[in-house]
Image 1 (cartoon, rainbow, N blue to C red):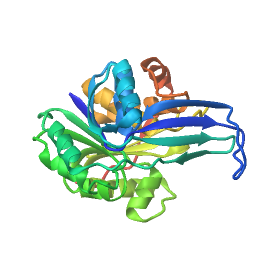
Image 2 (image 1 turned 90 degrees about the vertical axis):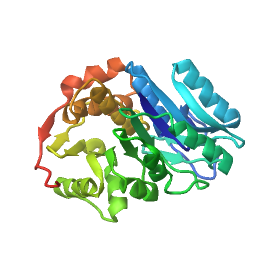
Image 3 (image 1 turned 180 degrees about the vertical axis):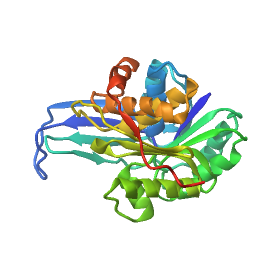
Image 4 (image 1 turned 45 degrees about the horizontal axis):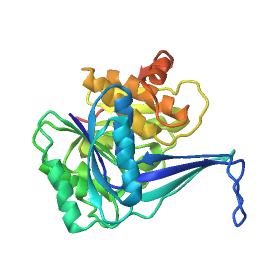
Length: 309
């Protein structure tokens, strides 16, 4: 079974307009809402691909009910702990020039609600896959992902997709896969990477720090997979960018899809690229058909061998 954890989900309000004028009344050209959160996105893409998962985390108030209803309609199993406060609302704004995001205020999570959540982690068994994804609310300790990993039985594959202190602490316990983008990678090491060699070297540092495999997304410049067996560099297939929101989560889901199908991660990587790209080229999250339509356009080449043992 695959479990996804979303500690800080949201309702994402997507709006688009030609130009945003600060201090003025702005009329949107298009708008829609979707339940958001990185782990929830992973669960949805997996469901689109015919892979079952269980969504864990928190949800509260009328916004939380909206998320629960959507997951039920999607056919996704959820064990989200009910909060007293409302789940946040995020704004995703796209203009002709760029994309911007406004992150909503996170609800406060009480000690009782936190302990109830930890009880859901006890259902995870050896051989399962756990995706720890997204930001950590300020009311929770930055070491929560580390705490979760410490509770797991042996032989659980942990996928880690977060940033900052939660990333650092979780990495100390060892994980199967991390998926930073190039910006997050630079933030973590407090450096700026301008060449592929620098990016690969930084990814190899993550392996040495506890990540068995490292998948780095580079936006329009493609992506890099670093494993014990070597380095693979993937392209971005041709297409028109609609929205990059959820593309990284889709890359995680696509890679897991290949792994569940019995592939080595270097082979599953192709499905990760196709999934992330398909989401970026459409409104909402990719379907299986859209992902498969891009597979023939994926080119992966071997890079320099990973020197991390």
